[in-house]
Image (cartoon, rainbow, N blue to C red):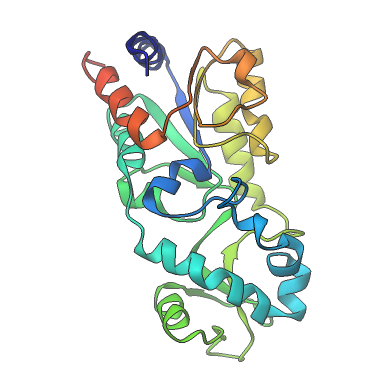
Length: 254
């Protein structure tokens, strides 16, 4: 890591009036949560997402989804925020970030202390019955599921409870996506952390901010299509880069 890059990125963050972080799976891999596409470890290398994580598969064969998601749910329930999550929360508290837009479902940003978190792919905190559409907190249900493998069912009608995560073939939460798009579009600095910017619509959110003169800092191990427009790029682990970057930003008063 080049010290001048840290200083440059920190100065961009300090000068921004409305910085926003956009995060993906790469920020959570240091917490022990596997991503979906990495060679050798990505979840989609071993499973066809349409067979196990699509809405049609869930409706007709929910047991396949739950068999697939069980080890992931166990990892998420054990996981703790790593230094990258904590650094983003610290930057938000200090007034340098207006919020975090995340593609992750692991709740680690909230656990780290971030306040304005927009989860465009949903979360595991609640589940919805596919029959009567009642919603329930997922904590106790998920713990029982990970311990026994028993498919969660609605206490009222007995229907299968689907975690409030977005599956393939399912629409993203409209209001959350609109808020996330507006937050990034109106920002003058986008800090991409742990996302290769391959999944839409999040992948295109930064473009309007850039077209309006916004700055871009990328912290991601792999290249992204926006690399040519980035002001600073870090190819190191987010859990290594982000604490150093936050420390440099906070050296000077806001």
